[in-house]
Length: 363
Image 1: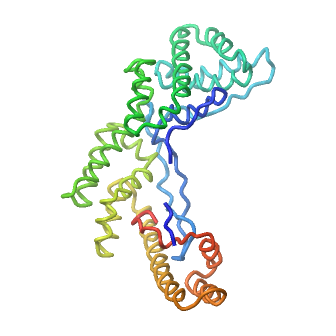
Image 2: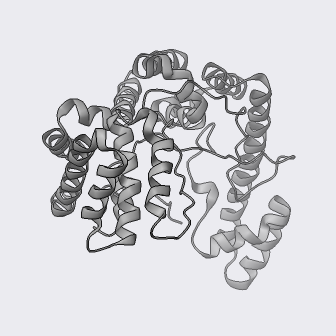
Image 3: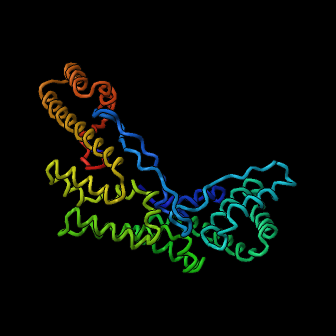
């Protein structure tokens, strides 16, 4: 029975500008979550349930790179070639104009326009885009044209160096990419465009340092984690947490040293520690109650699963073939009820869910 155990930097195609945006203009840590509600009763489940977080609260707008950029919205155009460019200009001015001095917003607008003009005129998209900028944003044309040129050059650099980048370590890859960004955009502008990535990397480095602190317990590591969140995100910390609270909790709980400490605790102490982690990271009483219930569901499921695996192993030593499978079907039905068939299918495919490591607060 084998245990189950990604890769960075993908290829970039000229026609697929959105792919480059996703890989190398990604502003990390901006994923939104829509977790499902926990089950009503503790049963074995093939799904990983998560209680929904508290309703999001609108935070102050401002610093780019923490997920408050304009949402990807497509303009509604008439389809009349004589009118749609003016309609597009109006839409872009309304959507981006107020923050267009910010390099990150310029990049977001230009990428939207690149997709539009590449689809509209694959052979002459760049000339038409520049003409559009000159008419729609005459006061910022030179700045936007230079940003577009740098953006295109950066895409070309990524594409041309794809094989080289794939062969580097993570640290070497980051260094190479930042060298290219600083060279093409200028250091200050590059850091403003990739502000979110810098913050995310700083948080990752902090988590690595926290994980290495052998003399600190879970509460002390959590205190350091909260301190670093505030140092990295400053006055935008609460905005960041509202949008990434689940991810923020998961990154801490995924630390091997935290899991090791939680495993060493007695059940009641572990439950209290998990509750403290969630409370310190901003969950309200209602959400804490949902998580408490989910922890109990998971504990019950794992208890049943481990008992099942022990009995399964004993049967496998005594029986084989159809006789074994008949007994296993009965065993799965006794432990897992309506999910017995699903678990049987998993095992037939070589997956044994209760051989996975137990990750406290995660599965």
